[in-house]
Image (cartoon, rainbow, N blue to C red):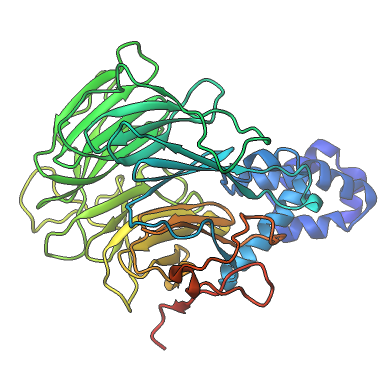
Length: 480
């Protein structure tokens, strides 16, 4: 039976079921058969395709709700192609700060936050009702300064009814505050400090005596980790938020919490004989003993500086029990908690779990300071390294074909924080935030305009011939 005949004979609901199992090329060919089938593909086929080919993105989330399904697919295809070709527009989001910091990034559907020293810099996410009107951009709102608090060391968005502008902020003195950012007003002056509403008494969770090194949130559970290894778990929906606290008894760097896994868990990156450990989360507490120890491929002990969830479209599926970690020895490790591949040569209980996949840049053994996943086809792992503002990328479907790029300005700095989206990568060095945009439709107005600066730090920035992106240095990991 020909496709044309099928369109005339088969009921619409049967055709829709068939569409759910077709890839993009098949849907395109099907839409050419006749007007009736073309209408079905545009009304149902592309939305079904999007359902099974997810491209998570904070900054595009609101705009995509008003885009047609076909426009969303069209955008995803264009950005995936640019990822495959390593083609993008690189943009700094500000001039260099006067001092060197260790900043952090937090991103929601409406705002990008960059926390550096005592200040939170806010960037508003713009909106577009259709793809033909242009892609959503980023515009600078202003800054929020904590004049009566020590330096900010960590920041993460937390649930607050329908607001997407509430964050938990960790400070150098061990306090954690819930901060409510006011909603963006177009008439606000970018030259004046913005009003800040902060919950000060009491602070979130327990007060500890050392630096809040890491804050992560999943559902209503907030996980904090101090530099000396005190981990606290807060239930933000409870009147008495502190649920549990444990002490890892070692220098600690990073934490990760996943409440959507079949077994909710937390992972901690430390400097110890066991740099990456996983603890179970019960309904009432955080387990003091790890149920999994995750080892590196290297024999010597190292440290884990960042932890994140795996790419949603990896070959092993979208399981929440797969985590990605960045290590001091320059490796990015992927561990599957369901795996039975354990290190039988090491004593201890539980037996250490070996990584299922390891990424590294053969031209650099610099420590990995930040990791994030997403990107083209939702299958990219990104890692911010310790020197020269280098970000490395690997597609998990082709792990030996990685490549690296220096951030705009080539700051001699680690990439302290990194967020991958479907078409964008946001990062921050000791001097400024930046973005790599792989999507179509980027113009000079998509990101903040930076007027020429007389400061010497700005001299290394040079616009591309297209007048949109800035020149950056990139290289392939292949040795041939």
